[in-house]
Structures are given as structure tokens and as C-alpha cells.
Image (tube, rainbow, N blue to C red; front, top):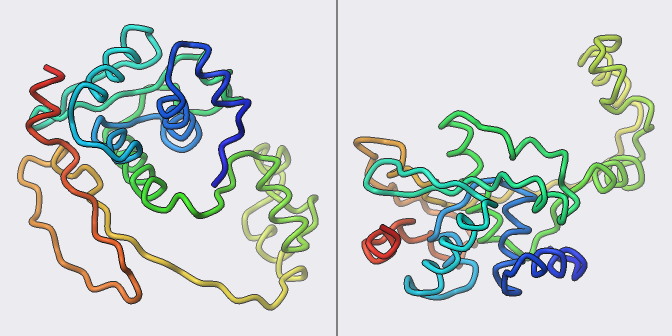
Length: 218
């Protein structure tokens, strides 16, 4: 995963450090929501002044709002149009208000990305189009676009047409254990289950909210 300097430079214009700008780019691109612990995971440091300063900065600049969930856990919502425009993401749906389940899903997605930053992610429509058309040889005309949205073409039609362009390929699935911020949304969160994952050398994320972070922010 590569973050273009033009995006971090645009975010640094708002007064953020380089690390803060990179983290905000990831949030604006993949999640729209984040926690202080995820920021700490990204910059690889322990709870303290840096996370508190970042949280206060992003709220005072009116780039994000914050809401407290269960166990005094605080989730931040990146909503500023100016900030999304600076990352080239002004039309993403992350700026809107979402359901609790949606927020939880996006936090899980960000957890995965933070843990697997060496992967390549399709961040834009142009990248997705290039991936399916150039690498998989799928004709652009059968991809979901304005005709599908208008109800002029069905999902079954797309599936039947795409079979013609399928090529033999090897697909590898990976799995990763993440907390998913469960303690923020469940009154009685389940005990973590130890799942044996083949050829996994990394440990799971620690809890997303420590007493140090919560007390410092409050």
C-alpha cells in the first residue's frame, strides 16, 4: 500500500504532522471512522500526549466528531468535506451518518488494513476498473455501472456474461484475527476465542481502549 505524497502534503496543510496525515488518509479512504487506539497502532507508540493531542486537534478543527460508546470507548467520525476533498475522496459515503453496525464494520476493516499495510488495495474507481478490465480481461461494458443502477440490467445477466471472460487463475484467501472493537458495542462481549491460523506469525490486536487513553481524553 502506497500513500502518494500529494495527499499527505494536502493534509499537512491543515496543520497535521506527516504521521497524522497518513493515518487520516487511510481513514478517509477505507473507513471514515477510527479510534485512538487505532491511531496508536499506526504510529506504533503507547497511549499518551500524542494520541490526546491528535484527538483534540481533529475535533477542534471540525474535521471529525466523537461519540462515546460502552465502557467509555470513544469513536471518531471523519466528516469534513474539505478534508475529504484534500484526499481526492469528496464523493465517498463515509461523511454521512451511519448505523452502529456499519460503524463497527468499518472499524473492523480499518483494523485489517492497519495490520496488513503491505497489501495492495483498490482505493478508487479507476484502480478497480483497471483491475477487472486489464488484469482479468473483463469487458468494460458488462461491469456494473449506470445501466445496472437504472435497472436495465440484472445481476444474473452480469454473471452469465462474465463467464465468457473468465481465465484460469489461482486465488489465495487469508484470514486475520481482529478485535473489531466489540467491547464498544456489546454490553456483554464474548470472550476472545483463540483461533489457530495456519502460517500466521502475528498476534491479534490488543484491546482498543486502555484506561490510559480513555482517562486522558476525558
